[in-house]
Length: 411
Image 1 (cartoon, rainbow, N blue to C red):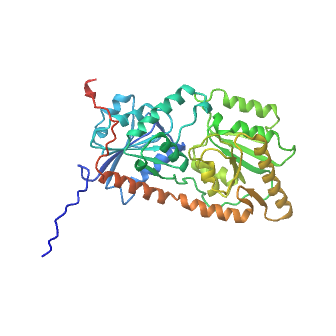
Image 2 (cartoon, rainbow, N blue to C red):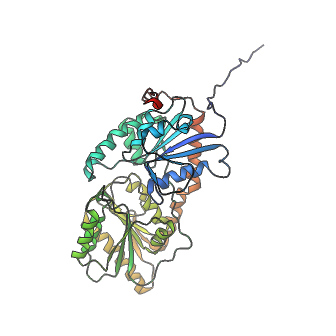
Image 3 (tube, helix red, strand yellow):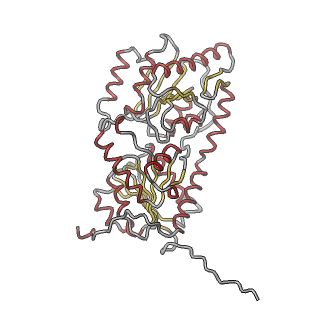
């Protein structure tokens, strides 16, 4: 008689019962800031109506402008590693794209816990005003080698980490969702100046200076208005904002170019996207570039440089020009403005240039709407939740990079 062998399937489960404890880490948790917005989606995935009973969480950061009792603002590293939630957490999730002290805590997480990081990409050293901190950021990147899992928003950052030496079985592609969507139907103006928009921090690698130079080269009298949205950061790019102002004044662009500053309110930023016909993004480095998807969601054409992740995220729907070619950038802007202006005069639909060829603007906007559905917030939250649950049921991976924990309270 055949006898079936009794086999046992060994599935690891966390020692704690639900709610499972998840600790999130970010340098600063600020309303409207891109990395903070990415973290907020992860938090919302664990705190929804159907998931809130299964998870407890804390957000550890060095500063915040948000009122949330689960946020822990740290004075120093000691505050973190002596925190009871840090010690008890089942999963630690770190945001990383620039050096911050708290990210080193990944090396001291208790052995029974899981660690994960979301890698946003690091700006190359040669593009940074603060080259010392850029070097420290690239050195701190080695912490990713110790993580049980590393999430990447784009194929560009994923291939970066594969080349860096992160094991392929620890890498996961997890594109960020579009979090800024129109508050209603978008209707572009049919008269007045053709409105353009630039969204990004006022740092050299985001290309705002290239953009104003391109605007200075446009034909005089062109009915166009450019708004540049981005907070000034004198620490990262000292004098950059003032240089932009001086260039705008010296080239009589005051009526054409407006430096809006930072816009922290989602409704206000959405309204600016909704007014714009095109968003111009001459960035020299973006690990993801969420403004492309935000622009598409608001029916805006995108004109951008062709470096880093921009070809991936534009997906053939934008018009890409060679990185650093200000003449080509200006020509692409001029051609788009001319097409829209001519169509307005004739009461027709403009045909615009994209990297995939010319297309009627009404058909183009239908394609944009279809594409942005891939970046639905609920899809992201479901994917992230699945990754969290997978991490919690897997046995610890031999990361080999965690440091023997000293007796922190006695230090």
